[in-house]
Image (cartoon, rainbow, N blue to C red):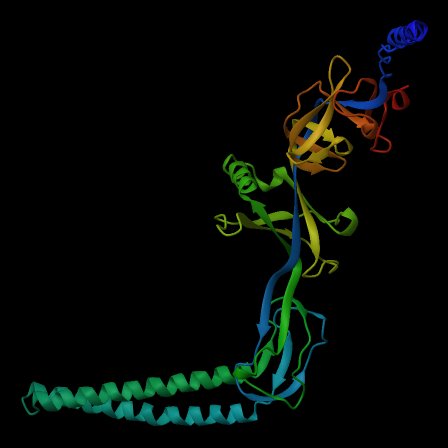
Amino acid sequence: MRGIFVIFLIAFLSLTACSPEDPPPPSAPVGVGVYEIRPVEINREWRFSARTEEAEAVQVVARVEAEVAAVLFDRGARVSAGDVLFRLDDEELREQLRQAQAQVEAPRSALEVAERNLNRGLELAERDFLSAADLDKLRDAVNQARSALAAAEAALAQSWLNLEYAIIRAPIDGRVGDTVATVGNVVGPVSGTLARLLATDPIVARFQLTDREFREVVRLRNSGLDADQLQIHLLLEGDERYPWPGQLDFIDIAVDESTGTAQITARFPNPDDELVPGLFATVEIASREQEATLLVPQQAVRRNLLGHFVLVVQPDQTVSERQIMLERELRAASVVAAGLEPGDRVVVEGLQKVRAGSAVETATYDWDDATGLLAPVDLIRP
């Protein structure tokens, strides 16, 4: 029995001696690429989603009722102000004009007679041969004759206008759309739109500013920033830049309380009709003057419940998370509004291999002028 006890004691002491394990050696630092935050001179730039629309739009309607005698335009074609679009049958309108001309003669003659009677009455009244009441009647007759003549002349003028309305002209330069009015149709003021005419050169891009952007634009305008100091471009699908630069056209006078935005428009030349109303596009506005700005590569930015964050390499070569605020995107980088300072090193390569507290070895990355991408400095600056 004592022998068994001794064996168990030896076994226990052996296990006790072997139980403490040596702490594992520290893990080797992980290699990552970092970009050092520094001020970069760039143009101040804004980008806004926009939709194109015509500079002017006219609904062409008939002002008189008549039969369409001719349609003198090609649908979808460009027309100039003053071009004849429709010609209406004017035979009935000419007859109305002749009647109006005839109806002017009678009141004109009546007025001449009334004026002669009034002049004779005034002579008799001076010799007390005519009472004041009779003289008032003569004056009333003149006034009535003048009113009748004025009404007849107004009807004659309207007849002339109606005859002119038989020729429907384009009021502006632009492109004319489709029409349902064909030769033989009777049209009139109640017929609605005969054709739609759009002025598309220049063309307008309409977009919205947030209240913060609106305040900034107003501040710039009030500080004397004129249109010549702004570069305004239109980006089409795939960020293709429209070749003609634009200019600001209208800035709203207030922010809409329901949306928190303000309307703004920019005009762009459109001589070749490359742009049509209704296109989605991006308006890019940049100031010609440059300013120092902190940029962070977009590939370094992650999101969590609190917003955007980056991994920053500390002086002791460990990684920490840093919440940041971004102002806007600028191609492959974003403008930093808060959270980073010059000299901060953010992880741009190897993000999936590290987390807060990881020890790292760093390789410095920078922008490659040839490709516009981030690359190790050793490769782009041998």
